Image (cartoon, rainbow, N blue to C red; front, side, top):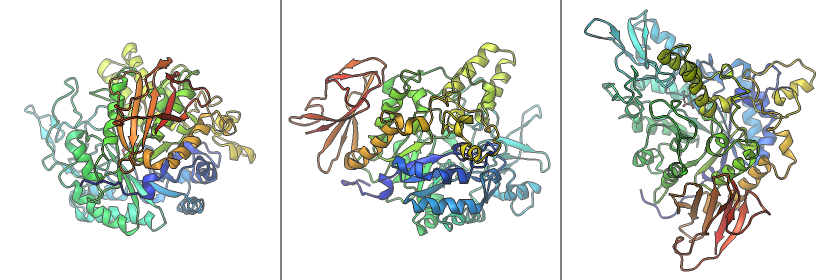
Length: 596
Ligand code: GLC
């Protein structure tokens, strides 16, 4: 649908702060973050100027994939707390004028979920059909083979697991312990809605981040994926199993439940390069999802056959800019909505990936990205630690044994299988890739206080005189340098800059939240210069970002470049306020101008 004026909504203007419960704040000193820990930090969160918190899965789970393997939607992972703790968190969040979203993980459950236990118990169990079971195939020599060649999302193995007891394979697009639910079965869908959605909506949550939202409907005949990685037995198959034939029917059905509660949704939308397809999910008229996370930006620099089969920074700035441009373009003359984010719990730290994390550049890089993100249209997301400019754990001080994510250790396992256990060169290459891109970096416990034990992760318990345990994941080696306490009262800190940028975004919402984006120098390999335009009023802002670590002379955009007869550009924001020089962008400097 074509629209001329963008409809304003509270959630479009909102900034959403994402929390990873295991690593946010540990209130009871057991070394694992918890719900009371989150509640204790709500004032801090509110002080950033955000409007919503999104909590990654806090449900009962064996934690094979950090809670994305749920064994009971209606209970809380014990080390995090209880359903009552959730009720307190919901209440306290609302009391501060914030809203709260949960993670909705319903493509799969844990293999320890009661539904799967029943399903796998026998072929005639009433819940057999709640998951995706298929018979084996056999090679000409009689070797048993999985039903197709799909690779699962972690490591290099098959997406099918053989079940000895009932003599069939079940599908798991992620870990073996995460069997895919069969959405074709209407009883399964009803049970999913009641248990995972209504249970929490009744308790007052305001919306969901919907995990892997385009994988519920699989292509009927489950065809083999084309061979893109000839050295591998199993092939990446995302383009086949994402966006299947019944996706929009299912989402329409889900939306009926969600809209009864006025719940907002943001879906995770991998493997969807086609913008017309993306729009089908987020068009307001289609009533499917409010917005989605596209992967264009966060996939920049990933390997083509496996995301970690890559080298450091193997992309050029125009590729990054084009990716930003695609996600921004989604709202151009459409009734859809987009998101602005560069981090989440599945991504390494953006300062390390997209700028430069050497000590002298770190804070500059963090501010540059804060300025960029805050000037992009769509609902903005900030991931815990991003607001203090967290960087990846350095290679020298954080050995590969510290990486606990299943995605990381299955990658190392795959490399060992391919190249041999003792192949130092290949293993070091793999470690280099993980140091650059692994999900672990986002999951390292938050550093609240550089002077306290374990970066202050369990500070409240320590202050109360309790013995505290080492965090579940080794603390960040740079916790004494990058932490909340040291930035709280420093007006020049990354944290102070984030607060300033979020205020600035609110003040210029017409341009920055709702405006049309146009990259005016897409080929420039050092500078990202884009225009934001309010098509209604004709107001324009110019954003100029120097992604290099060198000072750059540059020409302000001409009236012609801006589509105007004449123009005066008035500087209104810089990452280096007070130190800017006309016609010059300092290393990693970002500036904003208003066109008059
Ligand atoms: C999503 C989550 C990721 C998880 C996967 C499987 O991509 O963000 O953390 O591993 O789904 O549930």
